[in-house]
Length: 383
Length: 228
Image 1 (cartoon, rainbow over the protein chains, first blue to last red):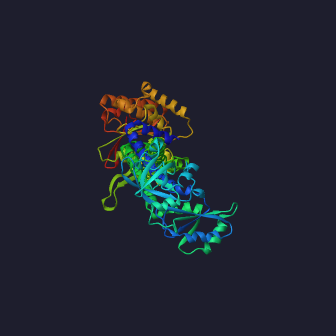
Image 2: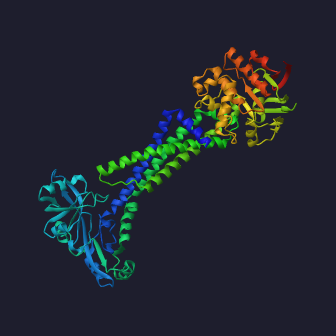
Image 3: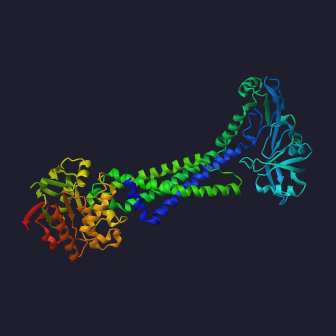
């Protein structure tokens, strides 16, 4: 406790330097929090479309890497599953990228279009109601994801004024309602319609080739058991997944195939290194500037270990005192990011603890490096 | 009377091999408990090296040196650290910790002793500051004190933990003659009241009067001893 108090008295004596050190820790905190926040948001949002799918098993082409870049497979593969014991029904899902023309600015932007039979109950997104499902049965009617990026136009506001027609995939379609998924890293916006309408929007796609095959099982049937029964029947060109496996598959794509997970990981490391360098510089120069005082303490009978605890104490004070404002600033930026770029960032306990541990470790390492400078404090030089 | 310092055949060299330069040569010196000894001599005569050896700040190379009953020849770093806690040091410059108040600086000499409570430490620091006439400067930081006041805080710090020996190196070098003389007479009075031993290195002829004995050194040897 006494070394800690000595460290605090030393830090407190020069408020300007203390502030510089704290802003270094704060900056590192902020950088790490933002990187982790974006990384989490990436992974959360990447599987939002899957999270709203209600089937038990899913078929996809082996060449499909992620939902936004699917490779269609023959619908017949899906029908093969129908005969298997435990299977209730199958639903084909079509997915494609199409240009949406902003009705206000006339600028085109690509969004992801989902096509599935409205009565199938496969897609169950927030805000998707029976009126919407009924509406997309009509020709050239779509529903729009109101959490899409604002570049697609103020669709909810326009919709409130009356019937709204927009240009989607060079086709005039009516927007009859809204639902909510949100922008993902794979798509900036989403639209939803029936399979018939989907094929109208994508004339080069055929009814016979689907992107995702959804398999509903009878109530109380074990999905893994049915999967094991279906798998041997299928050709090599498709893969069969449970819902969790579908989610994990999408996550793995973003974590590995796309370098995004790596990039954010790098960001965290850079934040730590920058923070480490700043804290080390402050601690090191504090020792260098007070080398005579440290040597005096050694002459007075203070051991190396005691003085090392003083330096470590200083680094721990910096860690804690820099983390608190760092957390608050990150919280503010998280709210800003959620509101301004529509990527929901969540500052949960798990992340808070993780970042605290990282920053704490960073300060301890800086402290341990700076302690080596204590050897230069030679009490024999004091005379 | 027991001996506070007993050095015999002390030889010390700086550097290695051929270039090694001896600064102490077969030096023998003993100081009785309660005695005030001044060490004088030209620079380079080895006074300061002798002080660092006696203070346990340097490892003894050749010879024997017993300080407060601890044999320093072959002593470990931990033994030397333990001895240093029983010694009061006064440096050429005050060497106070700039970020601590006068009272906290004095209390630092007591913080190495875990058996004391915070209140005891502060009370003893206050008494030590009273004794050097700085009762009204307890909360002052070194930067706001005059040179003489700083050296008096340093004296309080060197005495507060009731050391067996006080070692001082040119304690008046940074002070003007009158202030230096006053500080040293204060040191002598406080030491004599409690029977403390002092070994003090100085060039300053004006403070020779505080000594019980003046020892002159030259080329690493003691050349003359004068009883005051």
